[in-house]
Length: 230
Image (cartoon, rainbow, N blue to C red; front, side, top):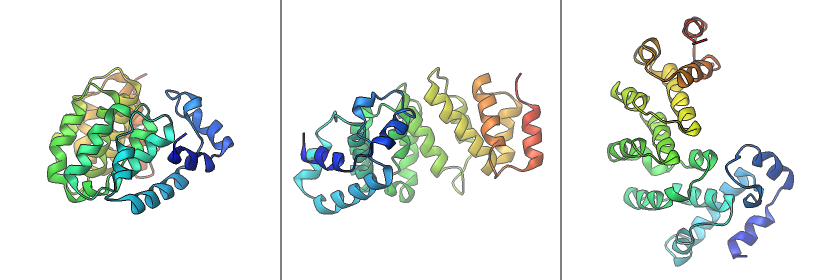
């Protein structure tokens, strides 16, 4: 067992492990230690602070594939802290093949992205076009997080509407994206629903998630329900 693995096991919570294992069925329970996310984030912050610029950080980045789910999450949290955009992208794309579940994918939110949206956008488009489930999902999530507010353009809706996938975790992210888009950019987004541009599953799931949102008005929810496929 590596030193990092020993430290992770010291934070193990068996009840949390049992609970969390049910949420990520694509990961074998034997690969889950059971470390709560706030504890892992705190550990990652301290590890990065102590090892930034040293061989220890690169040694961990190079030790893929990792043995445990929490090691992958730690890897993602460390990537989040890289302040150089190009280096962050290098480590992120290097890590993509190791992402094997929705939770690890969705946890990664590099801080440097918000200050480099012009550089980020072509990469997001590339990731969304990927046939790899979690690369595509990650790309859609970044578009949702960084390009549905002041930087929004209607073409971004078309980009996600064009995604055709049978993968459950891609379809869920497509639905989440459009539910969020409806809450932020209603006038443009509702056209996608009215024209039934999404497959039936994503169409209905988008409506379901939008109706659950407190950011959608009662009138809008009523209209959305009227368009749900039976």
